[in-house]
Length: 603
Picture (cartoon, rainbow, N blue to C red):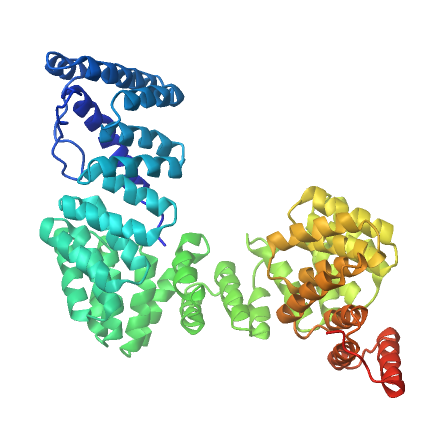
């Protein structure tokens, strides 16, 4: 969805501020109609001074109009002094003196809009429309307010009505047409922008957006025609050229696409996106060596020009076009085989492709003096963990720490490796070393709390988790960990519920946090609530053995023994080799009970 068109709304306010002043001062309130400046969609065509307007209407003003005019002028004075609250009060008095003046209501609505009091503004604008159904500024303002309130369909209807009242409104065409584009209403968008091109035939904007609408519909001929018309009116624009390149490639017209890339490069030789796209098109044309030559030239400047890699990341990696990204990066490496920047981005690409060995190979080629090196260390450690090469990961990190000034996160991963080997005291030692370097790292304190817990030092674990929340109050993992710890201990259950509910607000679809809340209810004896939340947890994480066992515990408390036994058996199947004695005892007791007497279901 596009952002609300603030420029259009504020332009309307600016117009109203002057236009309403002209209306107020150029008509008598007693039975005389308001004088309106012609609306072109861009504000009044001319402005006269406040004094001349006042003199022009003073001879025709009645006592009634004079009272309202007095309050209006006082409101304007307050606004000019930067006192909108005072202006609001005077405008209310002006409206009370003449409640049939729609422009005064619109002016007050504009003040509410500036304060983002959208409902109050909308109410006043609606009153103005009821008084004068054909008031164009009111309809424009209403449409913008409805948009801000998220009432998109109603906003579209209001914009359509505004255009029916006055077709020469460039801004309204653009806002309404883009609204339709962003909502996938391509035909409506094409209709609006087609009208705009007829009303404003020398404005390239209408042709550009009409091209986009027709392209979305599938009318490629019409889209091409309008993109070319856009470029005829504004030859330096690049976006229409990119749309044409995409159309040419879809239609197999690669020579035309290459020609368009070259036109972009003739205007902007440093347009790296155009260079990369041209290289890929040349490859499609069988001119691979020519494409690689372009990439090689780019590669020579990649190390010291990070902007060069931004279009590659945005256009290829972020959109999942990994094979093309790999070809581009390898081509650029021909120009600088030692480029740390290129090796790093290529490694990240392979990591996204779930090719950890290839990623590891290129991460290893990032030099220590590179800006990417610190991130590279963490990435390599993560890959060793992913590949379950624990000893290699330990050796690598110990070497890095010994050879250069380490970072706190190096110790975080090193401790993680020791934790995987169940060497908890060694893990604790490394975390403490990391905290000496980086004493405000919440990730280190979180890991500290976990390791303390595994060592059976729960009091220290709780203190570490509280430290995480002191440093990072919105850390959902720490909120959940601390809350679940209290629930598991059966203490501080009110605080546990508060902590876990806060975590759920941050991560509402997290099955483990959902299970924690259910467990708090279980410990509080609120078994029906526990069952409701436990079922949500199972739905979110259906293959977790602990959550499944918790479900069994809750069902058993509700005397649903058959279902409880089924949950325990499913938990056992999920655990595979690791079957804790407590779970086996629960299963054995229910099975023995079944043999002695039929299991009752407490449904």
